[in-house]
Length: 160
Image (cartoon, rainbow, N blue to C red; front, side, top):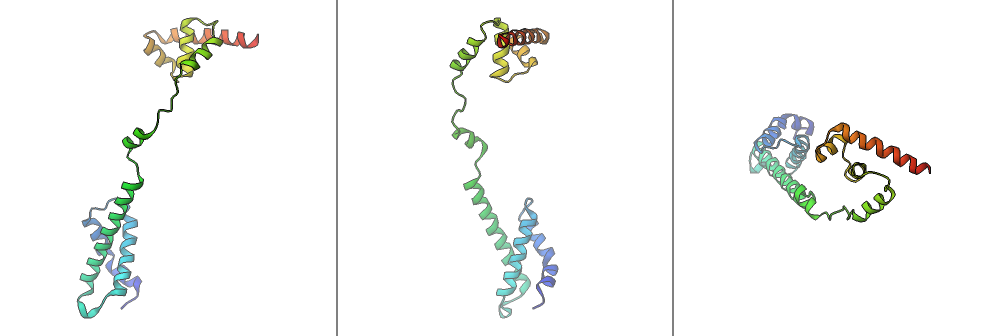
């Protein structure tokens, strides 16, 4: 038989046709490499007394690509967790924040109720000024006033 490089060049369109016929649109290069490996194996195993090499190579390559596709599907099924399934198995990582809130607020007794709301929304919920305003149904400037007042009082308390 001819050298494998010549054989690979000659059968390259066939491998691409098989990939296309199997609707393999992702990992094309990987499947092409598997096709080349299958072509090499077919050239090593081929018995000229049993028929035409082209038919043998086509069937051999197609079967190997289907086997590889099945392996990939099984691996994805075993090792790749679907997003919904994953989040169902993750325990709730957010602890009860009641005690945390009480400790935080005990240090902030000098703050008004609105300033305390700003502090809790900012620290615990990570909300922006705009989001706090929407949640409390007040203007953005009102929340900025809460923030300014709270920061001033907390700075004074830290200095003392």
